[in-house]
Length: 186
Image (cartoon, rainbow, N blue to C red; front, side, top):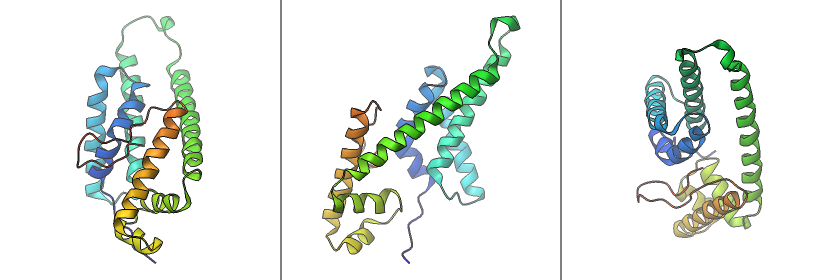
């Protein structure tokens, strides 16, 4: 059995920060997004120091979402107005949670369809890297191709999946603006 490289919270955070900000735009005002993203990283990093996090991406998303929902609940509690002026906060949060859950499921379904549409070698390389966390070298050995070819397959997979999601209404950027960042952001 091949040993997969452990991905740090910092790597995941850097790669998925734009997606976190996009997700948070739907929950909290734009002015508060950076604070919540920063707090997400701090909490995730503190948790990683204490104990190995098996699924860092899921941990970061859940932490960001919970912080955003707590922020909304706290802000609603600090407003001094008549109670009749506001709808039930629990109803709003439940509706928001259901909407987010449905949207996540739809985005995942589209992502799976995008991966299914990839050429076979590209799909294998992409899945081994993005789902199982294999190194480029291990994937190259597994597929019996060069490391350069493996990198090209993965990059092609990322771009095609991002294009597919963009075509279906999800704003995803697969182009890195910083050379040390990973190629994808979903």
